[in-house]
Image 1 (tube, rainbow, N blue to C red):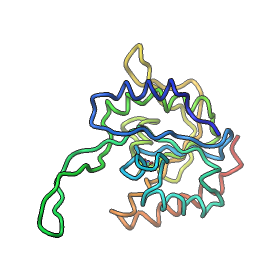
Image 2 (spheres, rainbow, N blue to C red; image 1 turned 30 degrees about the vertical axis):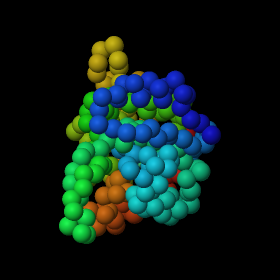
Image 3 (cartoon, protein in one colour; image 1 turned 90 degrees about the horizontal axis):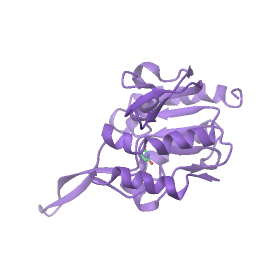
Image 4 (tube, rainbow, N blue to C red; image 1 turned 60 degrees about the vertical axis):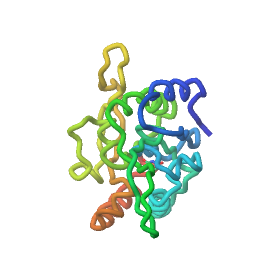
Length: 214
Ligand code: URA
């Protein structure tokens, strides 16, 4: 089971200090995973369990994996950011009382940069045959801000990916070519049900690629 080093996790925690985020969820998977999944950031459930994709989106993702003959143990799961980005909001309780609570939110560019060395190292060390991005955050982290999941989903890309260059303070393209397969974030089907058919279609296309890419 490959896991990032304690030092790298500590560096990530330090770099993200001062941002409204909490917890740290380790990405992990076997030494030679069938695919690497790149999500957005952990949510409330994941910070509680310490395991990526263990909430409602996780259930959806596990069903997709199962539909192509894979299980959690076969894949490496990580994300652009490894701490939970949150914002405060109010929730009205059934008795009419309002309480302050934390809500999940998308990570900011600064938070993505803070944890970029973690994802860069994971990709280099694991060297997965195929990187499956889940949603726009993972896709844009690796391909650039103009990439859109609605346009690129379900098609295999052979492309350089972006890594964070600390000296110059910019994302740069790798010299190596990677296989990247963009698809929707599993949670997107909850707020946009028609996406389900597209997402399921992508996973069936992905099934045809498994084991064929070195
Ligand atoms: N979304 C992600 O990107 N990662 C998780 O672990 C959970 C939800």
